[in-house]
Length: 136
Image 1 (tube, rainbow, N blue to C red):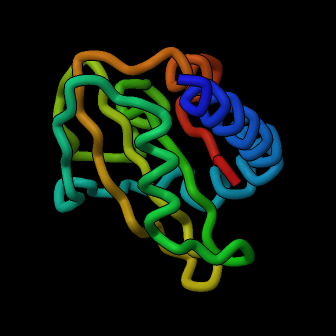
Image 2: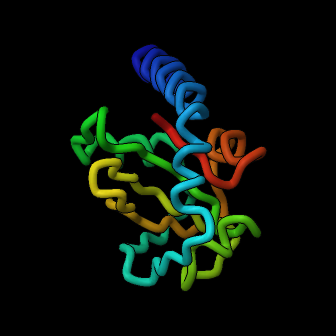
């Protein structure tokens, strides 16, 4: 039980660092994709009972990202700002797009759509003020 609490605290601290550090990269990435119509209908879609932020982090960790090249992001596809950028996505109470932006190729990669009726408090907190959040 103590190990779970310690791991949870460490995960939250690390994620908070990435979130605040990522705000610097947010606008430059948004400028690059703003105005584009990105069809996400071919992205892998996962229906889950509850979208958990720790699962999103685990997904990014599984990708072996390169720090100087890959920028991980999370987008709330139910928000009006992102609905115009990301087309043809599923409808549900909670629809998040997670993926990476490759600075070398200027492409969005590793995109996955998470669909659920609910998301955890950490996801809600991070997406509360902005529908598109850069995590690195």
